[in-house]
Image 1 (tube, rainbow, N blue to C red):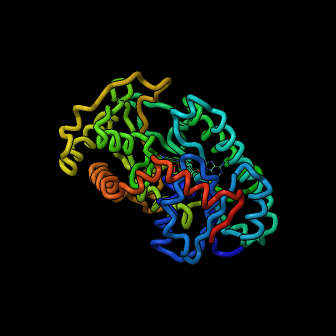
Image 2: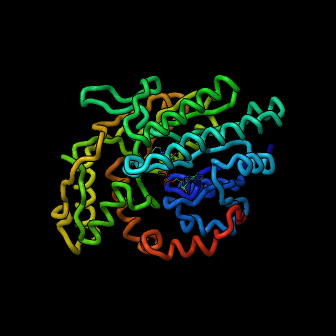
Image 3: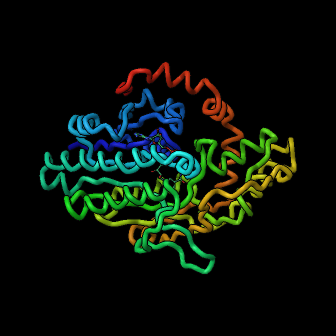
Length: 359
Ligand code: NAD
């Protein structure tokens, strides 16, 4: 076993921010295993392609043989498991991919890990970590008067996405208990920041407003989420990887509860200031039929990770939203890349062969 870590889903939103942050602070080798679904954007990590220590593997976490081979060949000391189908609306329209990747994929990864662990010495086993990156949506919905989710809050997932993540969390827990896999689960609130695919609320609103299109707000817009700037999540994950205790769960959240409508209005005000053409952008807000089974409120109690590991979010939601709007305004090429055929062409040219590896 060596110092290398294996990241799954590193070409997605949080994964790619994690990989960029990783090489911003260390030279420790990192392998990124990603299937390159529609949600992946390898362009984000293109600058790392010649970076010593970074390697990309095109593959599927559901492919037991490939995953097992990768673990045996590369001998990582940890797996950070981001890969998932992550968009709630898509899970309502077509849940199957969510069951396949989130449940079967996690199961496959756990089975391959169980087998890999048998090759290790006791000291290596004690040092190895499987970090399962999960969501607060597994806990279901809260009423305004309810306390925030704690690590011991009962699971009550309401969407196919949340149910598939809950199932994967339970599998991880069972592998800790039954097979002594040194795994840790993190359940994090809504992330936002640079490199997020423009189907999610914040980039969708920024991009629609810039295009002068309606800003579709579900229902009355009073659904409350706890927002966390993505780099604060990445910092939490690095800390959990180094200091977290196997078998533990850590809730991660920014204590930034805001209604969706408040978020959209804040984005409009920021755009009025930073990109005044088309102001006032709030005139574009348009209420649309609510999402089926839409959870009303999520809130995270992050006291455990603060107390035990010393983690703190570094930016407020207002600061983070400003940074995010500034980033989308300054990175029009990236947005064009993911919203135009160029991105698909690039994928075809660079990753036409399944199993291709670029170091
Ligand atoms: P994302 O949808 O942006 O990226 C997912 C990545 O996983 C993509 O690069 C995709 O190609 C890859 N992938 C999908 N299926 C795969 C498969 N079968 N094999 C290999 N790779 C595959 O997701 P995200 O928003 O970055 O979320 C990452 C993780 O964090 C997910 O597990 C998600 O449940 C969790 N999470 C997300 C949020 C959030 O607000 N986005 C909050 C809490 C937890």
